[in-house]
Amino acid sequence: MIVHEEDWSAYTYQDASQTVLSLDQLPKSIQKEVKILMEESFWGFKDSIHFVNAQIVDIVSYLKDGDAHKKHWVVPKYELNFYLKDVSIGIIRYNITLHLDDYGQILKLNWPRQGAGSKKMFLSRENIQEFALKEATKREYNVHNFLVDFEYNEQFATLCWEFSFLERKMVGGAEYNFIKVPCRELTIIDSTKTNM
Image: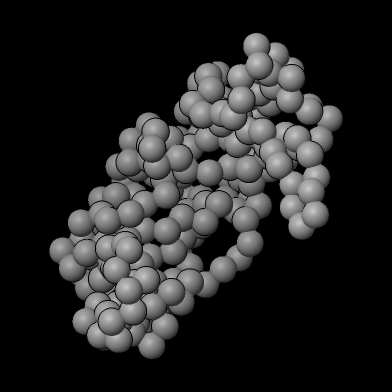
């Protein structure tokens, strides 16, 4: 169970944004809010968080074309991209995206605001996998062919491991059963069928 997401540079807002490669290029008020967030949410990972880039979005320019698809989410004034690397907990690279409004208020963050600021808060990957496989066996999932992904679950505001167990292959795809286990406790927060 290793987290190794691809390197990426987000250019979501293309011509309607300015990309900056240093936090120092952001307004001082935004730098202050980012520093506070880092201290509150990532305090134990301060040496493991790396800034990638940010976009300063001209929201009016971005929305002026009237594209209806752009109105399905709140467009941030600032989109900041970081990655976390801490191999001791199996994270080679986890991409973190932070959306802020004009005032530095958080619109979106794919990391818990509280409760995940230190690697001490993460259970061992071995214990989580053992628990997930035991639960999958009870549910009669295919424990011989599975994938594991690490993600932020917005509904439960927690980081979790998602185990996807192959149910059947189909032309052009496959069906999976899944179990989601938070990184902090041995419980299931979401899953598919329950044949128990």
